[in-house]
Length: 180
Image (tube, rainbow, N blue to C red):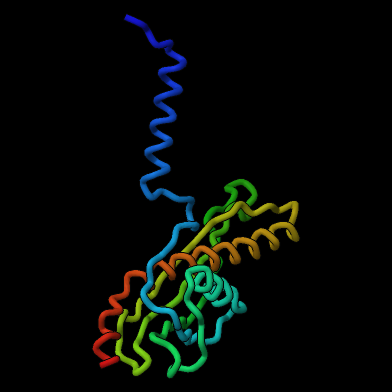
């Protein structure tokens, strides 16, 4: 009986595992496709306290998924409401000997809902939160401000992707009833 060398066995095992994972629907975080059965969406974006980063990232995510953002409710199939976008900042830890801040958490909170163009709820209003923390560097105040800005941008980007997945869960069958 012929014996297969150990290195070759491990190599074949790795190839088999990679082949199975590659063919089972796995994808890199944030790169998977979504299946949303609408092609035109209105976004009702209430004023933000920190620019339009979330809105811009969300529009980009919709575009990547083949959904056009339109301004008129007569042209859209659903209305996505983004309301009360708030960024927060709080101290997580303080150095016990110096009393200086060590760690800060940046948060993003938004209220979302999905409606038909006539105003009927498809997804009830819900408040959604995201947060991320970072280490505060006392010796680099300007660099720390840049880290905070970057953290806010990443939160908005991650939130936009999560909102797309939330949109995927909406039961759009109710729209067919309104079309008749």
